[in-house]
Image (tube, rainbow, N blue to C red):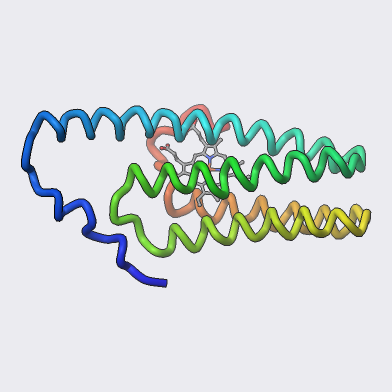
Length: 144
Ligand code: HEC
């Protein structure tokens, strides 16, 4: 892993403040998008938990895939975009989540709820691990 991402933005300098304003606005709206995306994907988590309860393997795979793409790819990329110079640790945590969902999807082939449940628990753990370090505490008053 490298820290190469750090400092890319600084090369741009302050050339035109108008452009900067636009960029800031884009960042802010992307931040709102990230929140919305996270909220939407957390609904997928509930759907996945329900599918696990009813041992609906097609549904389990479907929602696990949604989460893998939604959080593991889209949300992580959005966060990296809106937080220039984000630490390598964040990228590793994102990777870990992606791999955890992948393992859950692969474990579905065994049609074994115990294995799938264990993988699900590991995936949820990796949500927590990332939130512990990167989710702002001051704005989760609603605690969802
Ligand atoms: C790699 C890091 C990472 C992973 C993995 C991750 N999240 Fe997040 N999540 C974040 C960050 C960062 C925020 C804060 C976004 C903000 O407030 O700008 C967040 C915010 C949230 C929010 C709050 C949205 C709001 O309204 O403020 C929910 C709900 C959420 N995540 C659910 C989940 C669930 C469920 C999982 C796992 C299935 C998960 N997240 C995995 C980084 C992550």
